[in-house]
Image 1 (spheres, rainbow, N blue to C red):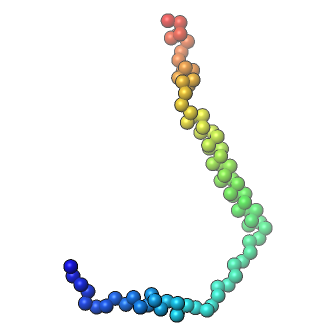
Image 2 (image 1 turned 45 degrees about the vertical axis):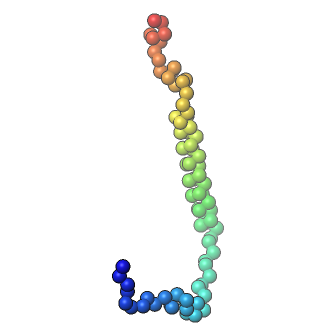
Image 3 (image 1 turned 60 degrees about the horizontal axis):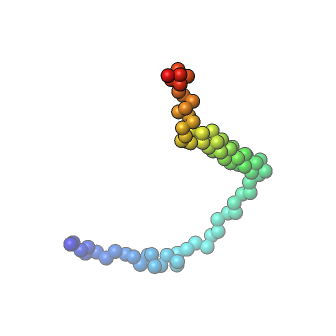
Length: 79
């Protein structure tokens, strides 16, 4: 295999603590009441949509013979 002739400078990783900044970021702004209510309503709408799709989709996911019996015509029963 080929070797590199130049050294790879990994010393900067070990000295990373030395270069940390002492400047603190500004504090986060508080959300207003309307923003909190809006986010809550959006979350509830998403959850209600998922629950509704699950409730409406469950009958189609059930496998049973009752669906095949209902699709047979009455003419085939009289034979």
